[in-house]
Length: 309
Image (cartoon, rainbow, N blue to C red; front, side, top):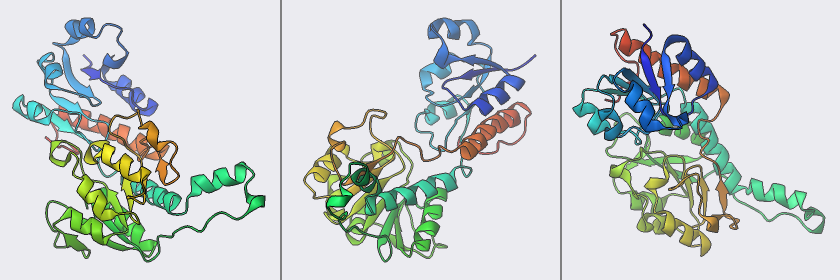
């Protein structure tokens, strides 16, 4: 008999098709009565595909063996509760490294050269009345990377191709990396022209980019957030962007997304992106395939491909 899987969020069509071909899939996110669905199938479900899994949901699924998260970040899953219940958790690392790194550099260029604003300048017919103001380039600047993990390293490679100097901050120095390590984030921000955030979300990093760190980055500094909105003191960031005590920001993530602080919309020193770091067809197909592969490995009694718990 096919194994019962609970799907907690909409997934890419290729992933949903692969799941449906192998498993009996119950779509919690589409259920008109979620409680009724869980009551009907809870004791049969052995796997979850998707995120947003708290302890309360785990307790409704007594046979649950694995939560296969669609995404590299798994802060929407209560991993401690999963571990206590002997439930494995997987994510989708590596396959999205290039896409996120590529967009990071793209947003940096867009912010430094004001590409969205220049496009609007031309469309609004302003060019005949005078040239667009001079802007800034990446060449020769220092970029501080908060979180030199798999994606952070890919960003560093691309930043070097742009002739930037790379430094980094993390929980510890990585002996095999050639870049200068800062144990103090505010000190790194003070010495950097750009601060790129690509660290994991969760309680341990909540508001790690504080008002103090933003002040250290200063009126000539640029912030790029590709991680989670929770890592930044968003209220302080908005205020400092408004009064120009922070030079600019390129943001792919927000604290309460998809809701974005309205105060950002009228600012010309920001570039806004709808959390699309990994949003390419190639990458999302690979992420979906890895979700299915982890489920397959679990139920075949084989080692998981990308376990986090």
